[in-house]
Length: 360
Image (cartoon, rainbow, N blue to C red; front, side):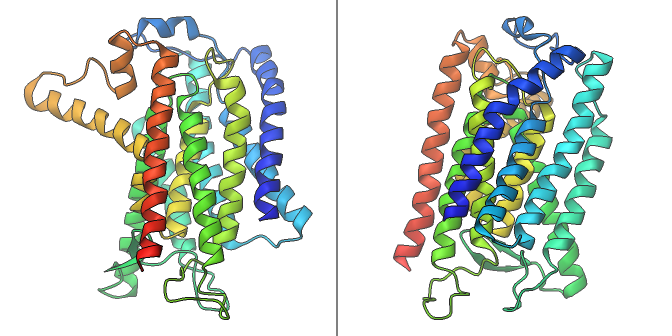
């Protein structure tokens, strides 16, 4: 538990103190946000605001995690390393996307094909590696079972090891792409994605600590409802580091934002959420805990699908937060209310998680 507190506190300090230094660097380099012309007109005043703040979030997370290991003497685990690899790898893809937008002063960075290819390469490496590295109890970081609160009876390896690995890679990459793009779509208002991510990763600190206290690897105390997660406390430490990084960044990203996280941050946070959900065996539960992200991405899917079918729009603009902007809601009002919704989803998800254990 000490490692969790150190990781969260240290990453928060690094993010809080490091962000203004990064802002000055970006201003000196004139790396400012390009605003799309078809978006809400109120956003035009944000043109030139420094972006790529995700660099600070990723850096603070890594420093917080390493600091916790050094202070507590805990060895790094494979599960934590895999989540941080996924987070950093997708952050690099986002950084390339942001840099192209800034350097060419346009709203389009990497082409959709290159962006998906980059996400796919990182995702495949993560997925394949997650099925390797068994510990002394022969548990690998991930399993080929689709999970809800723990592994279900839906086994992707039903047709053999080779087919199972292929199906798991496809399933993992679907989750990685879905979560990274969901957080990316949410990052449209000052502080919205950072605040929602803070709440969601805070919930995964609770999940990881609880799983660690009820782990099947504690032979002397393992009960019938123990969790078959390889490194639950390590995942809690990573979740705490991400939570702290978002907390410190939010100080500068809240309205009026001094810096945006950009695709660098949103893809990285989505990747971290996907990785933690896969390795903590809570893949479906994550859709409840991260329900706000699901609602926002579904609003985009509904808008596009309905327009293609009928030529009409359901919302004034998608994603959903822009619909409320065009309906006359203030930006701060939207962000705070969406944070409340995110908190309600997290409460529901953690409640379902705990109820499943109590009910047995």
